[in-house]
Length: 380
View (cartoon, rainbow, N blue to C red):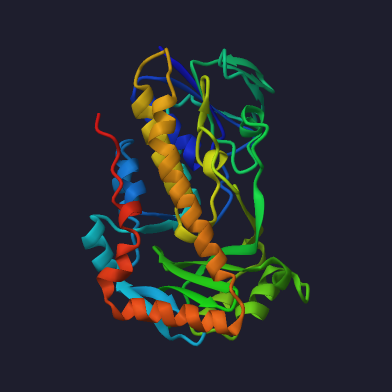
């Protein structure tokens, strides 16, 4: 039986392990953390990723957690709608909803799809040889026909394979994420853009709300204080229900981090027996909500192109994934730059353009996601 070693127990690594296992591979997931405690709070699984999760039997379990209903769209800080659509219209157009759920829930679902002996927690990978497939870990060496590097934005494997490629760069923004209890009143899915700042509100099941925000890094730190104080200072006067959500947020549940992405695509997503996946391959800003979704796509395609063969040729994997992920990575970075506009004239021009697009109708608002959301897994 062919053996695959997956480096990293995040969403991409777990999906790859489940997909390869279904193809008949023996899989070992090396995760340096002592437990699968996902970094992050909420996550968006778009229609393209749901189709990918169908291939490992998890798609319908995620669909059952869909909570978005009614209107959603883009707003200004005073509450004015610039673009509006409905969750129902999006589902009808793309054949599936975008499901917002707890990252921990998705990790649990993916882990449950693995063989019982696949996970090796508390195991740090020191090196992976692309020629032989030998993986050096803190618990000893492993021999692999395929190595999947899903070790994140600061991937040590990526740096070893492509030492001349620039590493991740700071995009100039800080982000915050939190899951809070749903306050009284109207809570609709929305993303609000102000001068250089963004606040997202996404309802979840069980009367929870996933909130996320970004602001220029220097502005976020001005005035000091913890994450909750910073968020209140930056967004406390924005439209309802944002102030109530901030009041409900607990300091220790707010995740604050600076945003990084890869400045340019890699020359390939593989070298020898090693395939790069997810953030290790194409770290992108969160503005399209496609980071985890593209990692899921990577995993499904990788399992498809490798099949059951012990003699692995990863060129079809790069051919299938590099152009698509590069396009999405660049588009997401472009939107990130747009959200950071602070000049009043530029902000006014941005709002005018978006309002015009909104007046052209719901179909126009959804069209921009057509090439992203309509992806389908390769046929067996």
